[in-house]
Image 1 (spheres, protein in one colour):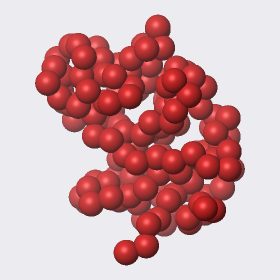
Image 2 (cartoon, helix red, strand yellow):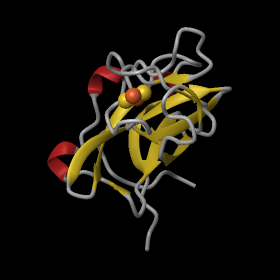
Image 3 (cartoon, protein in one colour):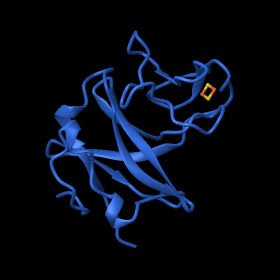
Length: 144
Ligand code: FES
Protein backbone atom coordinates (compact mmCIF):
# COMPACT_ATOMS: atom_id res chain seq x y z
CA UNK A 1 0.00 0.00 0.00
CA UNK A 2 1.33 3.41 -0.97
CA UNK A 3 2.19 5.74 1.89
CA UNK A 4 0.08 8.87 1.75
CA UNK A 5 1.13 12.07 3.50
CA UNK A 6 -1.47 14.80 3.79
CA UNK A 7 -0.51 18.47 4.05
CA UNK A 8 -1.41 20.21 7.30
CA UNK A 9 0.17 23.64 7.13
CA UNK A 10 3.31 25.60 6.47
CA UNK A 11 6.22 24.89 8.82
CA UNK A 12 6.20 28.55 9.84
CA UNK A 13 2.72 28.12 11.34
CA UNK A 14 4.24 26.10 14.20
CA UNK A 15 6.15 28.15 16.72
CA UNK A 16 8.26 26.52 19.42
CA UNK A 17 6.01 25.78 22.40
CA UNK A 18 3.32 27.93 20.84
CA UNK A 19 0.05 27.55 19.09
CA UNK A 20 -0.58 24.26 17.32
CA UNK A 21 -2.56 23.52 14.19
CA UNK A 22 -5.61 21.26 14.15
CA UNK A 23 -6.57 19.10 11.19
CA UNK A 24 -9.59 16.97 10.35
CA UNK A 25 -9.36 13.20 10.80
CA UNK A 26 -11.77 10.30 11.05
CA UNK A 27 -11.66 7.63 13.76
CA UNK A 28 -14.04 4.80 13.00
CA UNK A 29 -17.19 6.52 11.76
CA UNK A 30 -16.55 9.73 13.67
CA UNK A 31 -15.07 12.96 12.40
CA UNK A 32 -12.71 14.53 14.88
CA UNK A 33 -9.39 16.35 14.86
CA UNK A 34 -5.70 15.77 15.20
CA UNK A 35 -3.13 18.43 15.92
CA UNK A 36 0.52 19.27 15.42
CA UNK A 37 2.77 21.31 17.69
CA UNK A 38 6.46 22.16 17.68
CA UNK A 39 8.70 21.29 20.61
CA UNK A 40 12.53 21.27 20.70
CA UNK A 41 12.39 22.15 17.04
CA UNK A 42 10.48 19.00 16.08
CA UNK A 43 6.87 18.71 14.91
CA UNK A 44 4.76 16.22 16.88
CA UNK A 45 1.27 15.04 16.01
CA UNK A 46 -1.49 13.58 18.17
CA UNK A 47 -5.14 12.78 18.08
CA UNK A 48 -6.92 15.67 19.78
CA UNK A 49 -8.43 13.50 22.50
CA UNK A 50 -7.65 13.48 26.19
CA UNK A 51 -6.74 10.17 27.86
CA UNK A 52 -8.98 11.05 30.82
CA UNK A 53 -12.28 11.72 29.04
CA UNK A 54 -12.29 11.44 25.25
CA UNK A 55 -12.75 15.13 24.45
CA UNK A 56 -10.57 17.71 22.71
CA UNK A 57 -7.67 19.23 24.63
CA UNK A 58 -7.29 22.79 23.37
CA UNK A 59 -8.85 25.56 25.45
CA UNK A 60 -9.01 27.85 22.44
CA UNK A 61 -8.41 26.61 18.94
CA UNK A 62 -4.77 25.55 18.62
CA UNK A 63 -3.85 26.37 22.23
CA UNK A 64 -2.37 23.09 23.52
CA UNK A 65 0.61 24.18 25.63
CA UNK A 66 0.33 25.36 29.21
CA UNK A 67 1.90 28.69 30.08
CA UNK A 68 5.50 27.45 30.40
CA UNK A 69 5.44 25.96 26.90
CA UNK A 70 6.86 22.69 28.28
CA UNK A 71 3.74 20.51 28.43
CA UNK A 72 0.56 19.95 26.52
CA UNK A 73 -2.43 20.53 28.75
CA UNK A 74 -6.05 19.46 28.58
CA UNK A 75 -8.35 22.42 29.10
CA UNK A 76 -11.03 20.44 30.90
CA UNK A 77 -9.38 19.04 34.05
CA UNK A 78 -5.76 20.06 33.56
CA UNK A 79 -4.10 16.79 32.56
CA UNK A 80 -0.58 17.45 31.31
CA UNK A 81 1.32 15.49 28.69
CA UNK A 82 4.86 15.34 27.40
CA UNK A 83 4.91 16.93 23.95
CA UNK A 84 7.61 14.47 22.84
CA UNK A 85 5.98 11.20 23.87
CA UNK A 86 2.35 12.12 24.54
CA UNK A 87 2.69 10.38 27.90
CA UNK A 88 0.65 11.77 30.77
CA UNK A 89 2.93 13.33 33.38
CA UNK A 90 0.32 14.79 35.70
CA UNK A 91 -3.35 15.13 36.42
CA UNK A 92 -6.27 12.75 35.95
CA UNK A 93 -4.81 11.16 32.80
CA UNK A 94 -2.04 9.47 34.85
CA UNK A 95 -0.85 6.27 33.18
CA UNK A 96 -2.45 7.24 29.88
CA UNK A 97 -1.07 8.75 26.71
CA UNK A 98 -2.17 10.80 23.80
CA UNK A 99 -2.59 8.78 20.64
CA UNK A 100 0.31 9.72 18.31
CA UNK A 101 -0.16 10.56 14.64
CA UNK A 102 2.84 10.33 12.32
CA UNK A 103 3.94 13.73 11.06
CA UNK A 104 6.69 14.77 8.73
CA UNK A 105 8.25 18.10 7.94
CA UNK A 106 9.57 18.59 4.45
CA UNK A 107 10.02 21.50 2.05
CA UNK A 108 8.73 23.94 4.67
CA UNK A 109 5.49 21.99 5.02
CA UNK A 110 4.00 19.78 7.71
CA UNK A 111 2.31 16.53 6.62
CA UNK A 112 0.45 13.82 8.52
CA UNK A 113 0.02 10.15 7.64
CA UNK A 114 -3.19 8.15 8.15
CA UNK A 115 -2.83 4.75 9.81
CA UNK A 116 -4.97 1.79 10.86
CA UNK A 117 -6.83 3.84 13.47
CA UNK A 118 -6.77 7.45 12.32
CA UNK A 119 -7.85 7.95 8.75
CA UNK A 120 -8.29 10.84 6.37
CA UNK A 121 -11.71 12.49 6.45
CA UNK A 122 -13.98 12.43 3.45
CA UNK A 123 -12.92 14.78 0.66
CA UNK A 124 -15.45 17.49 1.56
CA UNK A 125 -13.89 17.81 5.04
CA UNK A 126 -10.25 17.46 4.03
CA UNK A 127 -9.47 21.08 3.28
CA UNK A 128 -7.09 22.48 5.89
CA UNK A 129 -7.87 25.55 7.94
CA UNK A 130 -6.51 28.42 5.86
CA UNK A 131 -6.55 30.76 8.84
CA UNK A 132 -3.44 29.00 10.18
CA UNK A 133 -1.23 29.65 7.16
CA UNK A 134 -1.88 26.35 5.45
CA UNK A 135 -0.90 26.59 1.86
CA UNK A 136 -2.60 23.72 0.10
CA UNK A 137 -5.50 21.36 0.46
CA UNK A 138 -4.11 18.76 -1.87
CA UNK A 139 -3.61 15.22 -0.74
CA UNK A 140 -0.36 13.70 -1.80
CA UNK A 141 3.06 12.47 -1.07
CA UNK A 142 5.91 14.87 -0.32
CA UNK A 143 8.97 14.90 -2.50
CA UNK A 144 11.75 12.57 -1.48
S1 FES B 1 -10.93 15.52 30.10
FE1 FES B 1 -8.83 15.99 29.96
S2 FES B 1 -8.20 16.05 32.01
FE2 FES B 1 -10.27 15.44 32.16
